[in-house]
Image 1 (cartoon, helix red, strand yellow):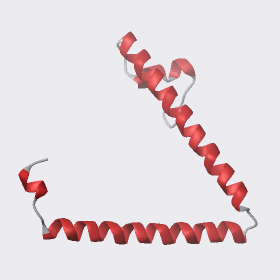
Image 2 (cartoon, rainbow, N blue to C red):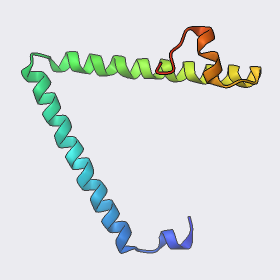
Image 3 (cartoon, one colour):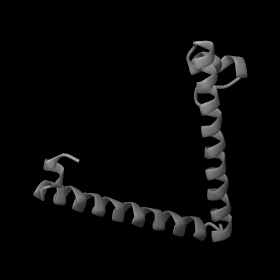
Length: 92
């Protein structure tokens, strides 16, 4: 850390306060979204299972992206150039 980053800074305090307020707004928005889903008949268990499956999907996708990246380096191409070979869309 630089000496400047260790010094008290009013701007830094304001920045942290803004970040706290932003997190509070996001928390409220998520609470409202959960309430909406519950009112539509979803259960908390169902929502938790869905979130768990999304996390698992993201982990698998990240592993696939890492493997594509390593393969691209070995072949000396971009990962984008590998997508057609594996029938992948750029949005995948």
